[in-house]
Image (cartoon, rainbow, N blue to C red; front, side, top):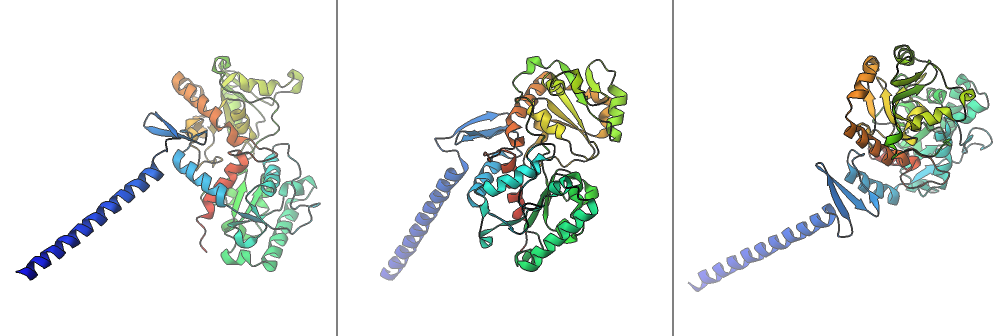
Length: 403
């Protein structure tokens, strides 16, 4: 009887210990869940529709992103941990290491070359690197009159030299290497290296399928014509009285159709050619200021600096393209600040734009102002600018590399 009592006491004691342990575990998980899933008392939060928008460190996380919270957490991790090694090979006076210039429609390439060298992401220790940058500038090649065929040979020779000299490429067959070019011809300069096209990350301004662009691997650079001629627009809805605006060369089928169908319309300001400087100082740029929507059809390539111009001047871009992997498309929700259409929609363009309710137009415009900083390059990188967004895209892709 005594033995039976002792056994019951032991069982009761064991159950009590297990119950205590379970309670402590539950409390621990609850604490951790609250700590990492709920904004701290120093953070504020507001609800817009069904979406929670938090403010941390003074930065607003808004619905211009596919997932504001994920973007915030991953961006912070990138800033703290991401490292890139830049190969030092190549004479900077020729095609390597340094940009050609920081102006013109290919300026994005030059800014990246300069920014990466000045940034916190650069490491001089290749063993610390997550990715390796191949610093050869196709824009400089074109500036020196290099033909397309010779560009292909130069790129191939340079990369093959890196492969034979260093062990890093062969570890992943180039999957942890990346190449940056904003020149249309520069994209094709990699064709002599099938593994660079297939495995390496190509950050390009011309993300076309016909040059082997692979959306989940490659990155669409924003083509930004800097410096901008006039200050950024925005919060000026009352001044925007023109329904839609476009002016440019008819160097693609969609542009020819756009001009033919709408150039005589009284509500759409469609010019059959570029606006001449003889018409006045900065007339082209000023038309962005007074337009609600700016039409952005593809030209000789799917990309256009007009998209970044529209964003900068506060004119909602209307993307008119059957295929364009838009810059930062996996980060930004373009439908929150732009109108994305198929080329066949050109015939109903005015009707589509007029059907957009005023409240929706205001929301698009307000969100457009919020994304402006993501499409701005700076001589010294600034948090959340175009350089940091490209780095974030690279950071996301480095996680998919199989070693």
